[in-house]
Image (cartoon, rainbow, N blue to C red; front, side, top):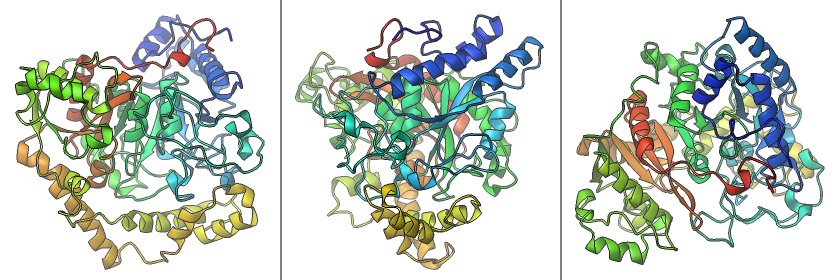
Length: 573
């Protein structure tokens, strides 16, 4: 394929760079929409291309809106800090335009929201162009037990990570078998494996905001908005080599977003740079009268999340690292790295008990090796790297027989049952208005559930106990003790940390349960592992400081990887 609008001048540009080009007149918003649409056609849907299947639907009004933004810019009437910038939304975020909101479920394929979610209103007021909707994990994973990572019955599969070594489905008959792509006979679910499994495996797209992260990594949009309850921004950003920022719970409105658990739900940007995440945070972090928790956003009414980003430094910054258990899930440290660090004087810079940076010439590097390399870079830039001990979530993972404490995941299931019923009851155009009715509808239309609906059935069986019931409250307090008091909060206080680093993917639900802000940034890449990130956890309501620390880290860490199959110029495959 030959590009007509997409070119090297646009390729992988940040929002700030695109705004400069728009202001200088070297680029128009209409050209930018054309460029991203061209990318989506080639990378997402072309049978001869990589078929990433990240974008479910394009906004048919996007070109008209882009022309309006261009005219407004010419006449000096810019709406706000995202004027003329195309943004994709996760498919669980309501829009009152011509696009549908389906949570990537075949059962909800025709659902249209009556109005924009609060954060979408804020984006439009800031001048953003809503380009369309990204596929997400169907009902955030509440579909069938054992379904593949990122699975959607509407797609009939999962988005493909652009760094994956081969397609999720080997033959064309199974590559797109959902209602959005003509249906077809039921097939076995594609088998994904976790990162670091080599050329015989797939790299997961990440759940549940996987389509959003894939589209940003593949440069099909300037940015995307995801949501998170327990790692759904963290994980996709990590495995796709992009930035994912989840604000402190309560800073972004949940009005108009399919819910799971209000004490953990948050919307946040998925971007190519920390600065882009801060730019979007300025827009979507705001008080919403319909979401009482957002009263805390008024603290950030003055100033900007961009303030101090470029001046940010790691000198004197205390960064904690929890290696225990989590490195095992990242392939462990390679033998070469272990041996090299026994001789390395750099090891003392980081810790006397754990190895420092591995030899990056090794062919069989693990994600843990790359993380250690990143820690060395941060230390050389002035950060103090502190080994965090007695982190209960890690201890439970590494030695469950010694630590009987357990998180109660039924807390989330119970909350989802209540909130999902409330959400469905408000949707006038659906043929079902409760989870019980949805289950019956799917049974009558089995083509909607090729993998079954065992997880939804499990949730419905929990009954209708209210969230104020004492058993639920006690379970929630138990989870906060494990993840907060004896996890994130305890570590931050004990070690006097500016931020806590949680490596790999096994820790993705910990900070989310505690409610703390997190930001995942690229930290390395190899063909053995795919992209590797580090996730920084900040103090509750310490979002601006966390973004400054993340920007300081971003300056010294390896540049964000770009998938070879997504490189610009000439033919792409």
